[in-house]
Image 1 (cartoon, helix red, strand yellow):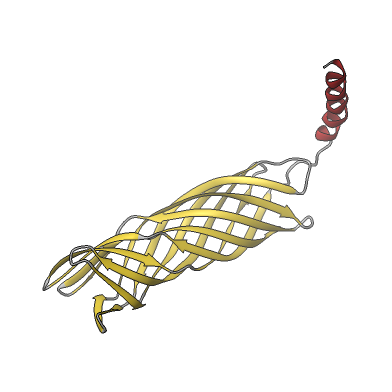
Image 2 (cartoon, helix red, strand yellow; image 1 turned 180 degrees about the vertical axis):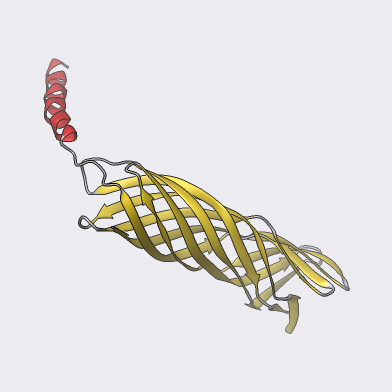
Length: 222
């Protein structure tokens, strides 16, 4: 036990000066770009037309997540504005009202988001900086004309429309410094919106966008 305490004390004696000599974070403006995969979560959707109303369970294929941001790094806190696009094809629709599952779907749901983000950087004496944070903003949801096949017949399910709703995200990642100006960003974001209202004539749909997102980005600090 005494030997272990001596080893710990020796390591602390060596590490404390090293941490004290760690390079401080460098404040300044920056821009970044990212690309990745969005995995939308299965969603409940309520739709209606002249024949009645329907309660659906909508499933999605993985899609693309692209965007960019500009902000200011204060050292341990970063504030930024972000633009992003997330889009995914609809994989299947299950109508719980009539117990019918539609397959061979033709249609998609996408989101163009404008976000204000705040991230906290956990600086240390390595080139790898973990961070966490999130943001709020709004997103314009785009629902395409959607149809699916049931019993050998293709049915029209949703009409195309768009709606702008509240959006938020939370996430974490690591920033890997390449040099004084460039760094790689590997991140995860949970993104969600309020329910969009897609109305077209006598038909309409209520659905929200919710997804898990993994991205790889490049940041340039001025």
